[in-house]
Structure formats: C-alpha cells, structure tokens
Length: 99
Image (cartoon, rainbow, N blue to C red; front, side, top):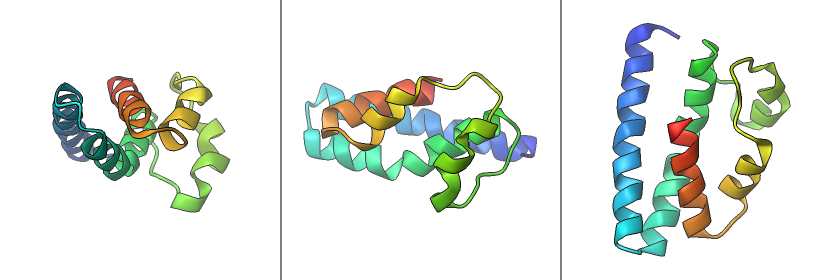
C-alpha cells in the first residue's frame, strides 16, 4: 500500500478513535454501535496495510487472514468485534484501532 494511502488510513482511524471515545464518554450505546459498525472496513484495511497488502474482497477476509504476517490481535477480538453488544463492539474497535 502506498505511503500516502497508509497515512490517510491512519488519519481516518485516529478520527474514528476520537468519535468512539466520545460515544463512550456519553454512554450512548446506539452511537457506539453505529460507529463500531461503520468503521469495521477501515479497521480491517488497517490490519492489511500493516502487512503492506491490499484488502481482499469482503467475503474473503477471514479466509485470508492467516496470510497476514504482522502480529495479529487475538482472534477472539474479531468475535467480540462482530458478534457482541454495541458497547463491547465499540471497545473492541478501539483495541483494534490501537493495534
């Protein structure tokens, strides 16, 4: 992934982090769930960018996740990220952004 695109992605994720933190400080579950959902693709893009690889198609993400070489977050984070209540999904999104 070209450096300008990596920087743009990092900027996007920093802004997403601030929005998620604000939703937590407001204790707004609907906002947490919305932001966690809308940032999912960018978070996954960040994992692939850390490995200097392009994102696979949406349906192939989990089939190809083992191709990533940079240290990955524990897989249970993905389960919590996509299969939990809004506050848990939002907190997990923050953990993955920090990763």
